Image (cartoon, rainbow, N blue to C red; front, side, top):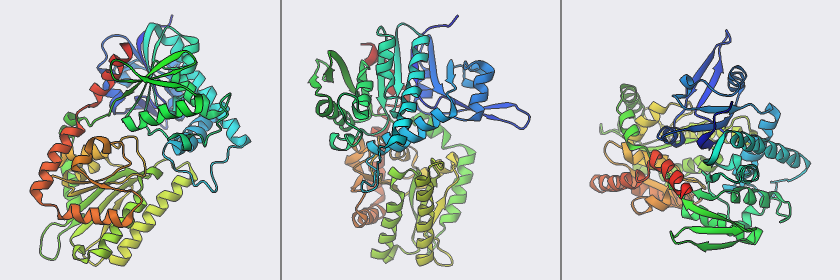
Length: 489
């Protein structure tokens, strides 16, 4: 007999992943983040529904019938779905990461892409199958009137599908990405009677409440609903927008996920972080006068939207325009490879390395390496860089939030000037004390880096204090429970 649950979370990635050892033994690795900590605060009966991402996960599903051992999950109830690998690949890489992600981040090189052909149509059918599997599992697991929080662009169709299966449920959807404006969103096949664009919007509108990281992304979603579906938008007594379409009302919420200050401050003071700080300081070195060089820090995955290459070009322009910084500054760039199963990401990762090497070849000296590039993911080293950064460069082309911009001020030892793209979701909360840049403007970004490097230590410390306060206003547990409480209203 299936135990039905009062609170359900659905996301592509779950709180635990598995690897298979040489002797067939399974090793579980628990993840972190807002959903993990948020769900752990829920009192009562809760379940997390997620997908098996690799061979280890699939083997765990086979051995447990998908209901994972709580010893592996930190005590959480988790149901993992094993979809056919080809269906998962089509839905995850073919549609979610290569279409929806590109649309919302406005990344397409439109003379050549996208191409919505028969291959796309085939992959879209897999995306529908993938979403239907989640809807079926949630319908099976949910108690009468339960609250269901569906996460992100992988699962945009789930709310509508679940509404058909279980109209009694309270359903929420949260978008962790930006939302594209109507003129870009309708690049998707936009036949109002059956096009993909309409299907995505109707899917999300199956929720009682659709929520976003910033008001800007929420506004873009409602504008798409108006222009593509002919929906109506009003404002309720609580000040929230409400989208009405085909007789149903969907409330629109905004929850700006913040940094987890307690965790970050504790974790960043552990011995392994101190060891990495010492190693980084040695790599950064001292200038000709014996002073510690300044550090411009960035920590990103080599995700196309993060704009790492333009950041490097702006640093090169800084060295061109301000030779007084030669030998006195180092750009510490952590560019951790992402989605390397997609060719465009492999090419981008290679370009990051090429530009960094070129800067070092042109400007480097025997005792000064202008760019220190690390490509192996190391969380302790990232925290060490946070602590010692004089300047943080966060210049995405477009980003739902960007938690790095929020985390660095929280753990900075001596204050850090933040150079921040106006296209990051975090800009809505941090703009007043950051130095704002247009992410496409190399010269202006170089000027912003110069201004940040030249900032008085006292001003830098005061700005960092205010940035940290804004960055931690809605920590992960509060972010999660706020959504849950709003859904139940």
